[in-house]
Amino acid sequence: MSHPLPDASFTVRPDDVEGLAAELTALAGELADDAGRVRSAASWCRAALDGPEGWAANATVTAWARLQEILAARAGALGDTLSAAAAAYRAEDAALAGRPQRSSAPR
Image (cartoon, rainbow, N blue to C red):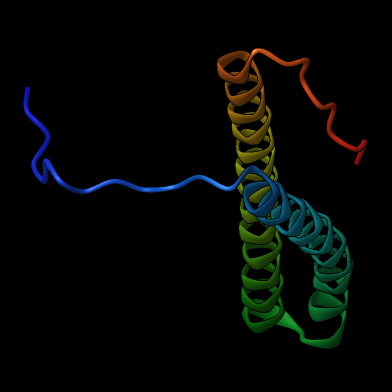
């Protein structure tokens, strides 16, 4: 299969990719924390509103918390993937240059 744009190329900057990975990991943590607070607020909705309105408010807030949990998990997974990609690029660059690999700072 030929490349659709034969003259096109791109550059990967592992430090920038690692920075994006760190931002996504931090976002995942913030979303997870927020989801916990939202989930705890769901019980107050049912207590504050009687009948079907309370049930509907509780269900809506609970669903929103679940959505935040899913987003947190996916942002964290993407952060991990980008971090691994940055490490792989560094390792390949080091191998091509014939020098030892620089270790990444721990997160």
